[in-house]
Image (tube, rainbow, N blue to C red; front, side, top):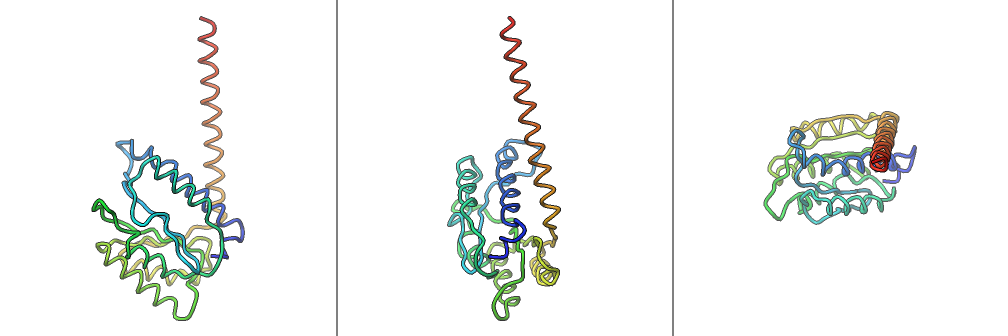
Length: 203
């Protein structure tokens, strides 16, 4: 929604999601990490848009496509939080190969807009959860006012999900730490490559 423009919220959120996407392939190849096999992204404001019509298997091509799609998302409109649940129920949360959803991650920076928004969103969330095999909904309040906590906690409770709160400053610090760690890794790799080239040149 439009409120995501404040405090650099959308930029920080995109940075965090992009880091997650870039690590998906590594997770798929590791025998020790949780394997996310399929995913989809849905952005919502006054309107709603899914990156894909259905869940997609994790692959380099899919991750690249999601990265490009995410880059085009702009902060705009209101918080019609029932829309992503309706879209997930109607196809965006299903898979052509029969894979079932084991969790919906719902992240919002504010309470639903319009009259009687809480009940409409709760009803849509419960309907989506039921249609997708009673999958739990993990709710995250992202830098939102505390008055949205009650809504998200009830939504999580109704779908056997979880509730968490992410502070904007905390996310900013985390994203900065990840960026610095990545830069340090790149420097180490560059230095190791240079040293290897120097050894080969001396032979």
